[in-house]
Length: 199
Image (cartoon, rainbow, N blue to C red; front, side, top):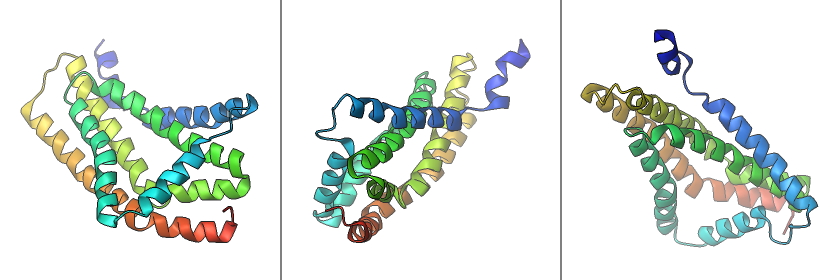
């Protein structure tokens, strides 16, 4: 019984497996939708339009928009970690991240061909080099902290303080992703679009 109750500490949270499951769903689902002739207005088109619309704004305003959008999700995950909602957040967050990436890349290829796949990858670079490990770590920590509540161990002050310190430090890494999304990604995307000549 003791061995079973300590499973979540020894095995850890399977964030990579759930992410890969979401990625597969995100890759397969658009192909099914595409075969059903629902490709009049694809996710990639909407994402491209939103990115260019955002890029035309003042960079400070764009940064605030990205911080609000991305940061709110991160803060939600941080808060869920000290409640029973940390476990479902970690599971849903891992799958959602994989699905989001899979959908974007697949819909880009379906809409624009292999060149669209390059643009889809360009939409994710370089910010997702920061986002993916940060979200993995947030989900793992949120799961572990929440499991202590699920197992009726209560919230030990030192444990919660350590949890917040670790997640806040990871949040700084996540913030670097936001900065690269605002200041680096538009440059990468503009260069890619010039090379592939989609528009």
